[in-house]
Structure formats: C-alpha cells, structure tokens
Amino acid sequence: MARNRLLSASYKASENTMAEASKSFYQAFRLLPKETFQGVAALYAYNRYVDDIADSGDLTQEEALGKLDDLEAQILNIETSEDEPFAWWLAFKDTVSTYQVSTDALLKQIQGQRMDILGHKVVDMADLVAYSSNVAGSVGEMLLPLLVDKDTPISETLRQAAIDLGIGMQLTNILRDVGEDYRDRQRIYLPQTLLDAYNVDEAMIKRLSYHDEEEIPQNFIDLWEHIYQIGDQYYDSIKPVIKDLSQVAQLPILSSAYIYHGIGNAVRKANHNCFTKRNYTNNIERMRLIYQARKVLKDI
Image 1 (cartoon, rainbow, N blue to C red):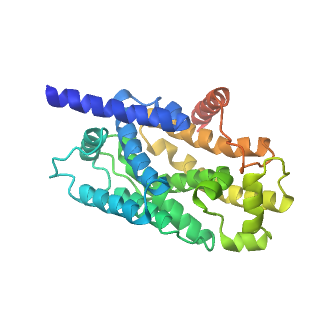
Image 2: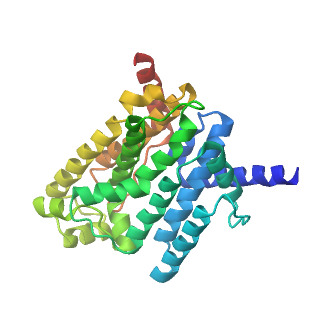
Image 3: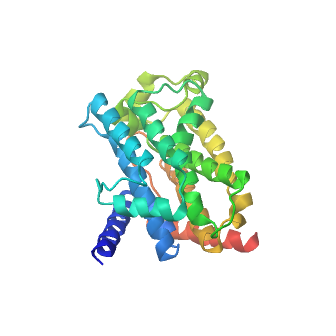
C-alpha cells in the first residue's frame, strides 16, 4: 500500500512538472485517458530534467556532463536499480517497464544534451536535423508505445513519423527562441550555411536580441521563413499515419502538433520578433486548434 502511495505521488509530481513547464503539451495530452496521460507526464518529466541540466547556468560544463553520465548509468541499470533519485523517478521507471519504452530513445535524449553542453556547431541543415532528432525526435520515439493499441507492432513508417514530428517541434522551438538562446546561452542554432546565404551574422542576432525597438530585417525574416517551411515537412509526416495510433491517442497527438505548430504563427503575428518577445499560443487559440484537429480527424 505504501508503495502504491509513493507511485501515485510520483505520477502527480510528473503531472505538476508538465503543467508548469508546458501548457501546450499539458492541454493537448490531457485529452488522453488518465493512465496514458500519467505515463506521458512521467516521460515528460524525464526529458525536462535532462534538458534542464544542459540549460542550467549554475553548473560548470564538467558538472553538467557528470550529471548526464550519472543519469545514463541509471538508465542502463533501470531494471535492477532500487534508487529513487527524483520525485518523478518511480513513475518514470513504472512507465518504462509497463510500455517497454525504447532505451535507445532515452539515451539519445542524453546524447543530444551532451551536444548542447559541448557547444555542438550547427554547420548546415543536416546538422540541425541530427541535433533535433536527438533532443526531440527521441521524445516522439519514446512516447510511441503509449500511443498505440496494446500488442500492436510499431511499423518503421510510424516510428519515423513520430521522430519527424519531434524534429518539427524542435525547429519551432529554435525559431521561437532565437533571442533567448543567444542571451542566455550564447548559442545560435540556425545553420551557418543558411546564415551565410541570407547575409545574417552574429552581430545582427546579438543586436536584435538586446534591442526590442528595432524592426526585424527582411533578410532575417526570409531566413526564418525558409526554416519554418522545412519544419512544415516534418509536421506533415504525422497526418498520413495518425490512424495507426490508438483511437484515444489520435486527437491528442494531432492537437499537440497543431498547437505547437501554431507558435510559428504567433511569431509571425509579432512581426517575426523572436528576439525580445516570448511568443506562444493563448488558451483560446489552443482550443481553436484542438477543434481544427478534431475536424481533420473526422475527414480522414
């Protein structure tokens, strides 16, 4: 009984983490049945923790890498370990065991954050996609067993679509947070080859990140739109396979895709100010996008 109370508390801690950190995901995935939603929340808490290690300004590079190494060891020994290092850990461990979540996907997330900590240089679009596949495509892959009917084999097409949706969402993150990434981490995730092609340099990004009164130059807007359209292709990959998911998962997944994709439209409405303005979809817009997803599903 005590163990059940501890597990319930761990799942609740996971839900709280998701609710506080991502209103978009929380609102979309709340449409799932309770047990499935709790599993999604537990995996979200894991990914949030790994991401926070890379983003923490309180850790040295050596300390952050050490924490990732420790976590990797815990993942590799998750079946035998009795440790409970985090409030969400019991729920996470229960979810991994119940749904046979891919260990490779869990480790890819850690590797993606190592790339971040070590200052992985994004030379071209292929570099950006590879990085995004690790830090976000891995999330789609690890969630997938929770989103199909029990004992349903997962096709390679469906697995790749889940990874691609994660990549699309990560590209949205990058396009939303250009200024924040530069101010807080001195990071530019936009590919160097595209920066060169559109005549955008670090000096411009630095200036725009600290001066909110300046109009966004057209060449940056053109660069932003170029990457946004590439992101569209990754988002589009989920629609042809949406019916391969369990019926209860189809609306939450399509809704999450529409809501997150909607962040890009919010940036456009802000005149492409992704430097000093935090752009997001508000509650009314999220409800509209959920309605749109529901309508699309009826027509498929």
